[in-house]
Image (cartoon, rainbow over all chains, first blue to last red; front, side):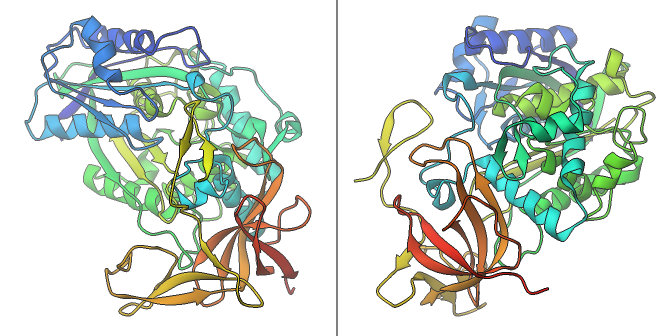
Length: 372
Length: 136
């Protein structure tokens, strides 16, 4: 592919009730534009889930971003990465020159805790909040595979330790396995510190064609898929097959294999999510993802660090912003700009985001991008 | 009319009820659903075509027996519900996978346990009870 990331930016991620969504966007977009040397922007894709109608135009016109096509997209937790994916392919196909991808979510205006289940959905209407969907995966893994409560906790311990080096992350306090397991139970077996906190935030990236400069990051591939049916015929936990299939398509398009990845940001909305996802990405065989945590494979300093930013568990999860924050993190890592959390010698990185909430399918959308 | 508070701080009305359709005129409750005439898929979908192959659907009833596929206890506040409450994905015998609340104490059910549909909760959610633990 010829598309490249020319600049990235993010706001702080955390509970920022006093901040207007515009201000979150301005922080992210101004940083991304400056990072890309203020190019002309020819189109904008913006991802949000709970954003007010017109959230994109309401914020962006203050920055002089007017008179160009603005397209708002929604794909649950993968909304920001969907905006990125569309921007990449718009550039790739020559539809636009430079495209701005933005993600924004002001969650504290809508929720104090877990996102309310969707009442038009059969499972949402039955009271299945999203933590419980992941908890179902965790229970299944504990009883069918070799995954202990301590293994689950290791994801939170690792990612919170990583977040110590990320001043934009909401929760930077290190935790022990005991502290993670002793925190309040949310949906058995997932405790509070195994669930991503809600957050307010925005993130942005400028996509164009590679300038050949040291600072641009090449998009080797970007693939978006929505889930197939997930029902009694599947022995896999929810989402596994969608992430696996999307990743395999992204590897094929990029001409790389899982073993070549140097650094990964993936969807650790809940601890079990990272274990299942690292398996689906091919870093470990199915049912053996916990071994990556036990032997340090996925921590900074290990062979393939996962979520050096601290992930959703530490950063918090403003739905529309998350995917572009992952893109920003991998961009910084590949440039060598990640300071205290830098993965030494990172050359090929991967971003994976998974959006869910629709009963009956394996996921609303998954995006996997391979960057270099 | 069912009124539910949803995530935007105001109350909306959502009809029709999208949850599984419980048939409770028999001795044990069953669910109204469909079986595809072309590919044989069992589904609780109310759409007119098979969600897998778009084949013709014929009415079918499923349950009451099934096996626990996985389980959890929801302990966070959810609008219109009082936590904690146990839930399970159940693979109905010769039927689809369906989300059920579990009767009894707030604890998870073991994967593979046999359950039987037993009606609806006070909130109208499908409910099942464990009738046989896992055979080891």
